[in-house]
Length: 164
Length: 164
Image 1 (cartoon, chains in turn cyan, purple):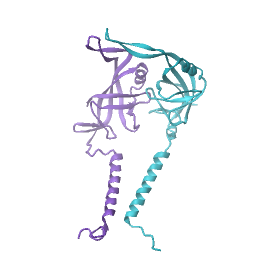
Image 2 (tube, chains in turn brown, green):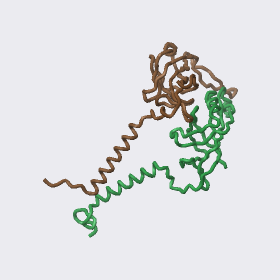
Image 3 (cartoon, one colour):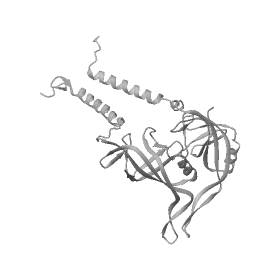
Image 4 (cartoon, one colour):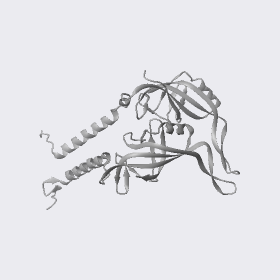
């Protein structure tokens, strides 16, 4: 049997594969919990606007008050729905005679302002739950308590308590 | 002969080996250039400059979050490490949007309850001749759109002026 000998090309390939594996491992296993270690624990309430609901769906959201939800995309951030406000689903309408915009509503459609309370962390750059950063203007999907919202945006954010 | 019958350059090293080694070097060089932030230009001067950014048609909650963000830093929405400067001032006006009237004329009509906001930033960046860069060597250009985030809000806007 001939001896297995490595030449320079083999070393290049081996080094490249090892480098790719190391970088890939680092990128995929790095956990954002390091964010949590950088902040002061706080209690936050954020409000998500959920649009285009039927009357039945809107009722389901009101019945979800007090239920636990998971929010964000990483399935590791939890909160509790503390309040739900239902209002008619608004749309921006045009009056082309007068040349004006006005807020109208879709018939028989509703939107919900869902307030979620969560334990989070605060530093100079962000508020963060376990892994998800929280700020007004970002999309924040959530689900739990029999309801879900894949498309809602945060419209309000406030601290409800300081260090725990 | 330059390449012998076995495909070896000057009879010594396989041409295939050379191609693979060159490809590997190019890959590593490309990764270095891509992730090192090196723009290929000599950035000669750390300096302070100012820029304004217009964000359009945002709701009251975003305006309130912007108000909370005065004298705080904003960052590139995709890279928290890329400092986009300190918000030193903002100017909010009622949002307007083009509407075409029934008679075919177009007017800029006010969108009720929404705002257009001009943000003014001070940034410790870099200047090279005619170009302005963040401290992470990312260009800031008039007429370019940037997603930025502060501790309280995330917005997208267009840079409208840059000055020292």
